[in-house]
Image (tube, rainbow, N blue to C red; front, top):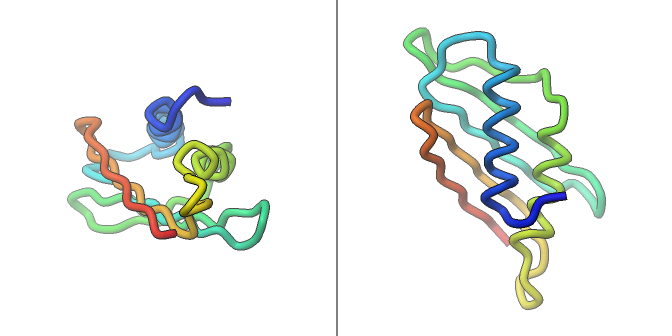
Length: 98
């Protein structure tokens, strides 16, 4: 589906731009594996009015599932938790727990 994790991050950001119908400063997503083939997503965005939940995902869970394959290594395996943060200027940060 994606050639590398950067392409996957870009797809996640593109979906966020389309589903958040509000001004936002940053978005934080926590993706937790809940089994062999499922991902639990918790996402919020922040703006001048505070913190807001995001629940209307289209393909973001699938993207985080695919991301598992892109960042896995033989010795670490798949991540258990991915924390993804993106700012409205396009900068992002990811942290993985294995």
